[in-house]
Image (cartoon, rainbow, N blue to C red; front, side, top):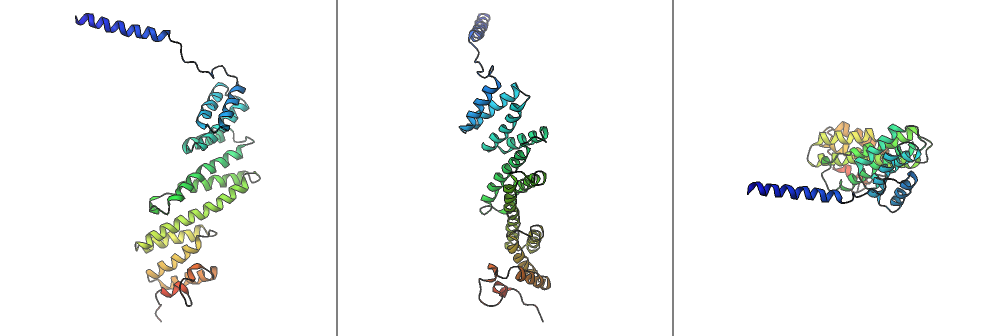
Length: 269
């Protein structure tokens, strides 16, 4: 009985496999497409913002026609499509691959610019939560990498049409990095870690001398020196502050000469 049951099961399996073999394979409709057909369809998907479908077509184009301008264009399009889907890792990988394969391509400057944009968008995401999250728990790596990418574009392609926008974004990123340091310095200051706060504020003043956030960083240095009873350095920093920011908002909240500085400790005569 057991033997008959085994034979029956085996027969069913064989019949099932035979039936499957009789069914037609699901054909790849792009298998015999020409390079122009693949390009046209991929472009159509891109224009319709169907980036995932477009990526598959660009990849097929490059795989089936790996040489020539169509393949090179497909590589660029893949990077841009991944950027639009917010797949940062894949987008950066595609950009790096293109730059490595085609360092002297006429549109290499665009790929440098795209590398900056990919990280720039990620840094914007970082900045959007910095006010609602403990800043010491965030690493502005994307901000630094975006700045480095835009700087590489500016240095390598100073006459590129993308360079002016890259410079404008770099200025924004410099202040973002300085502001991050100020946030961390304030975090330490509020917790009484005045030396740590001083070090972060001093770093912002030194490393980002042209950033608007430098004003608050210098003011925070004054407060830290005051809390640490280092009155000589405090007064030196205060003189620098008043000289550079005579109309600072940090001088205005309280009446009387010196504004907020009225609350500082008094140096012994």
